[in-house]
Length: 75
Image (cartoon, rainbow, N blue to C red; front, side, top):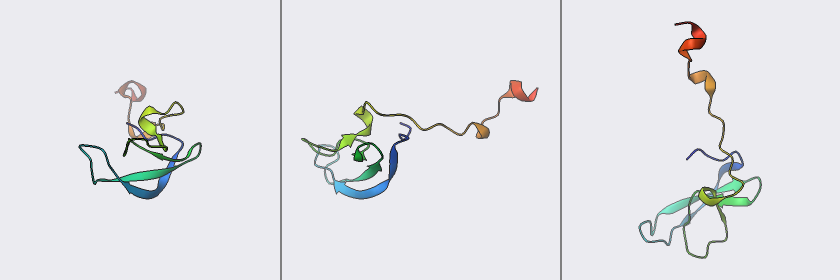
């Protein structure tokens, strides 16, 4: 999943309490809309927004200069 345009740098880490990822340190990001957010859930009853399920999610634009279109160059 491409990072959201609203997501900023990592603010801190929290330990996951979910089965399959218990004990893993999950990053909590700054968010320009929701103050803080996480990429995925890290506990039941979580109050922070989750990017994977957020209605305000907007993917960042990929750099198009890195890709070359063969038709545009005439090759």
